[in-house]
Amino acid sequence: MSRPSTNPPKTTRTPQLRAPSQPTTLNWSLAKFTLPRVYPIIDTATLGRLDLDPIAAAEAMLEGGAQILQLRHKAFWSRDIFHLAERIQHLCRQANSLFVVNDRADYAAILGAALHVGQDDLTPTDARRVIGPSAILGYSTHNVAQLTEAPPTVDYLAFGPLFTTVSKDRPDPTVGIEGLRAIRALTDKPLVAIGGITRDNALTCWNAGADSVAVIADLYPTPCTRQTLRDRMSEWQKLKA
Image 1 (cartoon, rainbow, N blue to C red):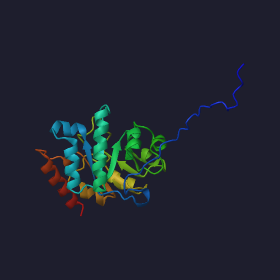
Image 2 (cartoon, helix red, strand yellow):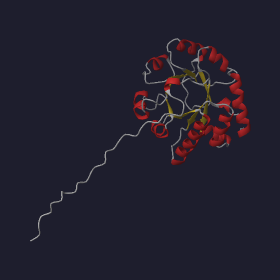
Image 3 (cartoon, rainbow, N blue to C red):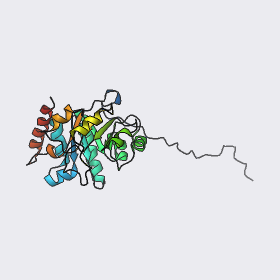
Image 4 (cartoon, rainbow, N blue to C red):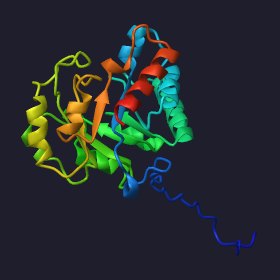
């Protein structure tokens, strides 16, 4: 008859799962966040029509002096698009520029990027739960009610469209320069003018109270090559001086 074992029974430990830490974009903490005057947007649909690689476009904009880049991709976020965003984030880190993901809070959180959401995306409150307390969060608004109802979790606000825009399929009604002036009096948050911004009207937007102007269409010259895009970005940087 065998003697009973005196060794304690083995127990299986269940690993404790910890929420991933929320990385912050390099050198872009909320404590020192200042919105650059020019806010270029890498729009994959526009670049597809122009037959220019988004990585080449990002490199050209950064070489031209961009201090912030937003990746705007309205189609399906495939694995390839995620890797594209990852590469642009790396370029922005090297240039000490802020990288912003449009719409997708989940990918912004994975990348440690800033996030910009609109009226049809996650609410800013829910988006903040995904990206954490330290990531920069922007929010698009199109009228007084939307802007004044923006929660305090938002770090900057976009307002527009100021002018007719060709970059959006179903744009909201234009608000004009007077609308921008009226909105400026309602918020102390950094304010980005959006919609139809060009080199011809950017100064008017800044003078009306915009801290920054977001640019898509007027950012991309014809023909659009890495060299011409870098030159156009440099032109925008001189305009803000």
